[in-house]
Length: 266
Figure 1 (cartoon, rainbow, N blue to C red):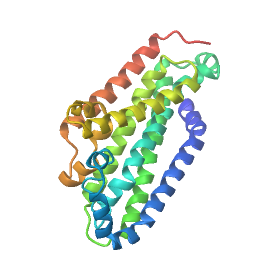
Figure 2 (tube, helix red, strand yellow):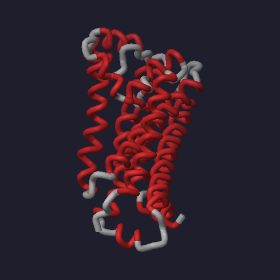
Figure 3 (cartoon, rainbow, N blue to C red):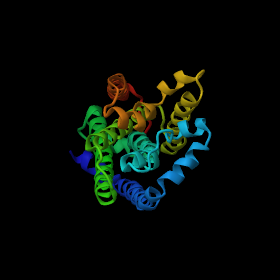
């Protein structure tokens, strides 16, 4: 419990910064909705003139300005996924490697604690902060939808979008923790985390705009929670849910196993 509480304190500042910035961005996007909704037909015609490939890459092919949930799914949700995933992977990858990088692991191992306890405490902290991050963003989204909606909307679809985002964040955090087993310097995590998130996003975009490369989209977790699909079907594809479960659980288990076998650098 001591390690868990220490990690909560150490990572509180970054959690607050990421959460506040993205919630403020969400507020800004929703504040633009009334003016866009009033000129929905004009913007729809503008979208029709855009390249289909570009529209597919940024999930605006089925954009409906008269529907506030569709508007959110296009203008805010995608950026929540991208930047939230970067935060999740940085948190997951850095929370373990930081001990070796800061030369504090020797002091920690000298205490009567097991490596499993170290991993569990740090993983619990990371997953808790990611859950709170997604929860606070989701609550702000619900409040903003209530303020700005002009017609009925699907609460189920809104909840599913939040759940989908949480699954993506947990996946990147779990993979980040696994990767950190092999990285001693915490600063090396940043380019890897950002590259992994942006790389998978680009793969998914290529898979959507090119029929020959369609298989690439299955390498991108962003495509598993595609806003257009969720809004249309009001569900997350069970196959993708299974992939989420396999990747997250496998990464968590491997992190425990490999960390116990790792030669710690002191």
